[in-house]
Length: 296
Image 1 (cartoon, rainbow, N blue to C red):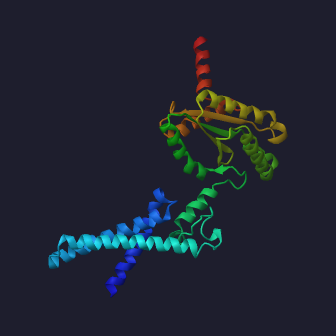
Image 2 (cartoon, rainbow, N blue to C red):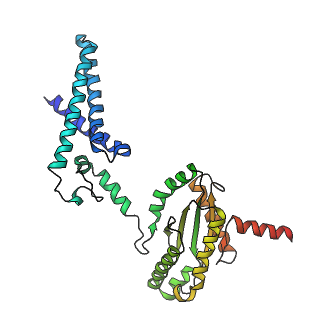
């Protein structure tokens, strides 16, 4: 009795965990996830039971097949019953009780494990509390996926590393409240200068990151210059005299992964800072500088 209860408990936990992992492929088809989870765990149990039975009583292989087919059919019937119950009995529960996204079918394993609820919450968060743009954590979650998607499709992806010049002096001279207002105004100005597909992140402090899918180096340099000019034009009125410096890098031309893309843009950002600030440094600007130096 104790052994049977323990095995049932272990099977239940295994089904729930397997159901979670199958969400990667079958998230929108709960009946398929439920049936697959039940069938796999019951098949594993049947294999173990048959081995023990064969060792002790020389049970024929046909006995295993018959029992296995019966368990798979039972798993299917059980899955249909659960989904039917959730659809026709639990369908009047508030949508928020089951999913932030408002699923059509209440999902009992979703309620038990909380994992998908947590993932849904992550998708809706990731915003910087001060500026409203995405935060650094969101960049880490989105960047690698976006990078792989664009490179697999043989499309460029550009990254702009943006830093507010001498922002510390704004806080020192006007106070942190004014500094916060400058950051908010900066986020608005940068957002207005981007394409619909571009994503703006506040990386930390006074640094922002723009991730631009399907954007080549020349176009990225132009957008960066447009952003710099927009801030420069309203420097005194909106930003307490602050300007911005920008480093631009594009993959796969200049990097083969996101970390190296970020490092390239960040390096160019500091080149811009060290060469007078209020400027854009990209592959094109460096090429122009090298050409001018060679000509001299």
